[in-house]
Structure formats: C-alpha cells, structure tokens
Amino acid sequence: MLTKDEKGTLINKTKYSYKNDIQTQSIYDKEGKLTREYKRDIDGKTLESYLSYGDEKTQLIVIYKEDIVY
Image (cartoon, rainbow, N blue to C red; front, side, top):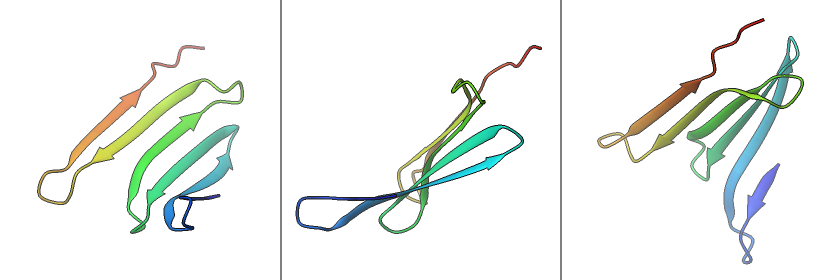
C-alpha cells in the first residue's frame, strides 16, 4: 500500500506479510528505509513493535516486545 500527499508525492509504503498466524506490517519512508514494524497475532494483539527515528548519525530505535504466556 502506498501513501501519497495531495500532490501525488510518495510519503510512505506499507507492506504486509503473514507467517505462522503472525501478521507483520512494515512501513518504509519515501527513501525506502524501514521506520516502523508491527507484529500482531491472529486476534490483532501487538506482540512486537519496532520504531526508528532520525538519520544514521542520530538514530533512535525503540523495540517493544509483549510477554507471551500461553
């Protein structure tokens, strides 16, 4: 899925993939750099989040993982 502004300029690209009942939503900026990624179970509960901000010199990466208890 592509997101564009009112002028038609690409803002970001979203890719979905599925494996073993886990949905992964990956969001890339207009340069193709992964900025956000979410992994969700079959019920839509977020199991893991990845967020990246900044450039190569001042990059902040935040990873959140849900404790899974069955």
